[in-house]
Structures are given as C-alpha cells and as structure tokens.
Length: 304
Image (cartoon, rainbow, N blue to C red):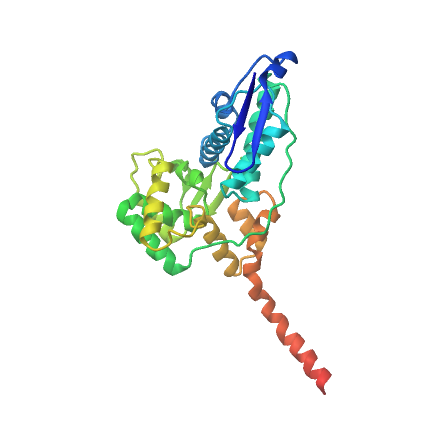
C-alpha cells in the first residue's frame, strides 16, 4: 500500500507503508500528533512556541497530513522543495527545519518513529536589516494606537527595549523594578535586564494594574492582525520585512548608530553569540570617518 504526495511543479514523494510493515515499523503517526504530544515539553510559553506551532502546522500541510513510522530523507527533500515554492528563504527554511528536528528527535527517543533523516543546514545569505525610520515609526504607531491604545503602548515598549513579542507579553509587574525591567521568558532561556526610556516607562505605567503584567492581556494573533492592517493603511503593506520583529531590529540599529559598542548591544538584546549581533555592525561605519584624515595627510606628504 503506497501513498504519493504531490506538490505544484515537479516535486513529488512516494513511499510505501507496506515496506514499513515488512521492516517491523507498524506504528504510524503524523506531525500534528507529535506536536500535540510534545509541544509543552519541548517549548516554553511565548512567541517561540507560537512560531513553532505555526511552522510544524505548515510542514504537516505540505505533507498533506501523511502518516509515517520513519521520517525519511526523501520526506525532508519534499519539505524543503515545498517551502521554497512558497517563497521561503534559506534562513527561514533553516528555522523551520530546526523546529522539526527538535520534535523528531524527541519522537525518536520516545519510540514514536523508527529512524531520523539527515538534517543539512542550508547556506544563508547575509540579508539586509530593515528598520523603521523615525517618520515611519510615527505614522505606523499612530495607526496602531487608533485601533488600540494598549497596542500602541506595546509598540513603544518593544522599540525602546528591543524585547521580543513573547518577552513583552510575558512581562509581570514584579519584573519591573524602578526604571528597569527583567525578562525571564527569553528565547535563550537566560534572563536579562534593561533600563527603560521615559516613554517606555510611561507606556508601562499607563497599563491596567489588575492584569498579571502590563501587556499580559495581548493575544499575539490579534496584535499581528492589527499591525498588518495599520501597515497597509500607512503605505507599508508591500514590504514583507515590516513585521513586529522590526521593532527589535530598530532598537538595535539605533543603539549601534548612536555609538554604542557591539558588545553592549549584544548584552542588551540577549544574543547568545556576538555573530548574531554583528548583522548590525555595518551601521557603525561612521567610526571609520576618523581614518580619512590620516590617509589625507599621507597623500599630501607623498605629493610634496
């Protein structure tokens, strides 16, 4: 008994469940079932867990909800081809495959599947970092605030702290001490503290104290929907990089452009490696301006 999965274009995958039975692989499962079983074990609450759920759902959709007892290299090829057909970059594919790898390793360890595919990281290009100009920020935030004052305050908080969505939503009142906040639910699993700007502090103080945290009442999907509507209204609808995460990029970019050294920016953002922060290093190119007078003097000396 076989099953063929076809995608638009020339890609297809065919594998035989009868062969699985002959090899003793009687148990079958699906990606959605594995996710439901292990998502709360593998990922803590927050934006990363939300993204993982979306990633695995998309991969299951590409496989048409197929059942399997062994996840093969051919199935991996089908997923990569399907994601590319959907316009995913290598960097995006790598993130989705990393989530799949973590889920399948757990399933393999628990005996749900009998083999694992080879995960090959795709080569990523150094992409352009998009950040908001002050005028874009003003227009976008005004449009979002018209839809919800809470969402508007949340945007101010995110752009001035560099927090991820999940970190901001997960903030609790006890995590705010004076003019400093501590994020505990982070992507790296390590807490970090950052000082607050005046407007970030004001955004927090304007929130209801009855909630567990200033932004605890925000639902990510609803916030993203409001963001996308506002983005369309202010003429940024055609820019795929103008997503809520751009607020974190904007914070980092402003710090680097303002002369803050890259190590401090790494600490502020909570990056585990300096390489992650180096994507913003080119914005500090103004530091090289001091080199020009030295070369000019050398040139004048040569001309004499």
